[in-house]
Length: 142
Image 1 (cartoon, rainbow, N blue to C red):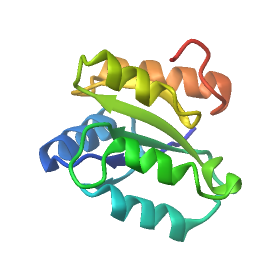
Image 2: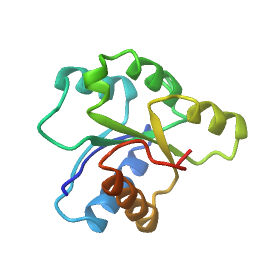
Image 3: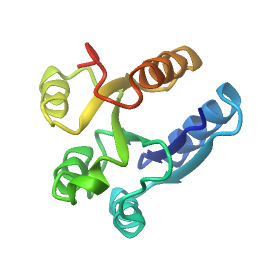
């Protein structure tokens, strides 16, 4: 199954690493990267509901300036349900702050957490779970 990825991270280097890791781990993957969460939200809003393709996997950095990952998720959850169903949100975090982890895990649209930097093993495990559940919420992921 071909996957579509959207990476949202304020660090250009982290976006580059995530994009390269995805493309080198899985062939023929489509990756779009944004360094500003607001621009990513605009893109998602303009795309609307995407029903003719599998859900896009949205890798979202939690701790970003201006529009944080928390702010992004709150805005995302205000989008129409059919648009929300077109995406699978995965929170990326390098923080060990239990409050941040608990807070991001509390959003209904966040289905999984991944540590930064992304590894091939973590990416393959995530895709295995997604493919096994056809994009439904990942049991035991949060």
